[in-house]
Length: 400
Image (cartoon, rainbow, N blue to C red):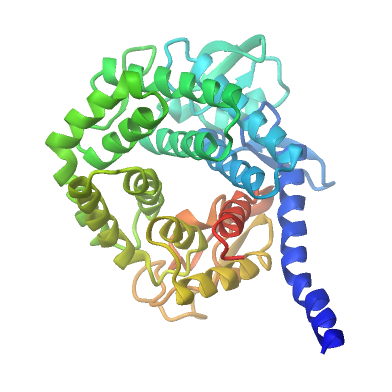
């Protein structure tokens, strides 16, 4: 009996240990290749396997926020000093995204002007506009036209880090960043204004997103934002489902909208102590969840675990989906599945495509699982945050 128990302890530990090594290897790769200036960028390789440039600067803010969250969960689970170091790197990067604009708004990304990669990055992001600033104690260019999804990702990461890392110094930095960005949004009536006076986006018709940012502000800096949150909640708390309803009518188009919704409800539902408003928020979240529940999405499953608690079927699926993610290539090779899976529209499969065969992309879980074709020329390497974030959340919540 003891012999069988010893064998089980040894063998049953192998899959979990292997998955952790995969997660740690991804984190090491991010540190080595995806943080050239302190925020997440994806390297572009030449035919010889050398880094020839960097891409996807326009979404650097949102993925740096996700990366901060991943390393914060990892630190809470393992207390590994390298996890804390990685989280601090991401936090410094986010601070740079706020500092470089000069007015406490958020940049999509920044690039030192003397970087050999600057020209290629700025050419790729020309449609967003670039402005002069300072970063890393050097003259920089920062990319504007900042969208709501960049704010959602950054506030998500800051909220998770504040909750997972109890160090007073870290929390002080987080509080400062949240306060600066939120004050700027409030001063500008929930608009994001660029240096040339142009408005890149507004939060006017998103009571859910406004309340989420204010809820994070109220938790982290209650003296400044608690009253504002309570008043906003009183007038708009019952409207949180309003923008979600038209979104779930199309479960395929602009799929990234569901990632923004999931990020929004992660803190909004969990941190709301008033029963009336908690019910409003949770009812709105359940509308979202009913739409995405069958999409085979490990990230959304872990958001659901955090909000709703254990569910044997969902949690088993999450373990399977994470295993399947490891079977995916890390480069953006073009893939075409037309004729392989039944189609119910242009570039739309009738059923979710298995994770290993889904289109190669930056963050798998924000892309429609129904996509039949897409990708690039195989030169861009994804960071792998779409693995380590749900993985460490699963460790934290006992799913793994």
